[in-house]
Image (cartoon, rainbow, N blue to C red; front, side, top):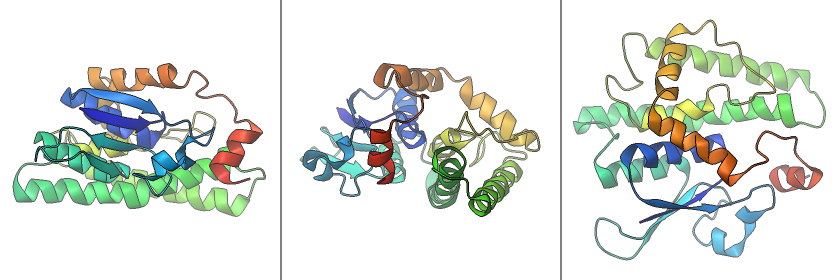
Length: 228
């Protein structure tokens, strides 16, 4: 039913987390971003920002032509609407989920990505950039930790796409670990999601799809990913 164009990165994990939780049938179409698959014309035809993940839903709810969706947040909202699951219940529940989904897409993901770039991948160490993004990521972790006080999950008592979006971006760089000790609510929430069988199935795909995950980048991979 769902064709998932995927590579095991934090944004890619967002979608496999949903698909495994929902039990939707899907087929993975690997997009090797280190080899430049994201620039192939056939991929750009439905993911014009040359980023994965993207999906093609061959059986949309309206029974019409296949629907393509790019951008991880848009995919999560589409899948939540398609299945009627994990998207927030009622008007107020949906608003609660969507504002935190937007928080993740606009803030937590990009800022953590910049932190990772300048601490792990940059060809030279720029102290200002490292300090800037480290402090901003820590601020965002604090925002999330405070939000989780008195709540099982980000939007309340139910696991939603807001959690699926934020979870993969918590401390994703093994070569540049963040200190999570100051954030007890975040650590409790993160552990609860890590223990879910669907989460474990989603992350098991990493080695299946990219056996080289975690290894240093080659010069060709750097060129494809960073334009160098």
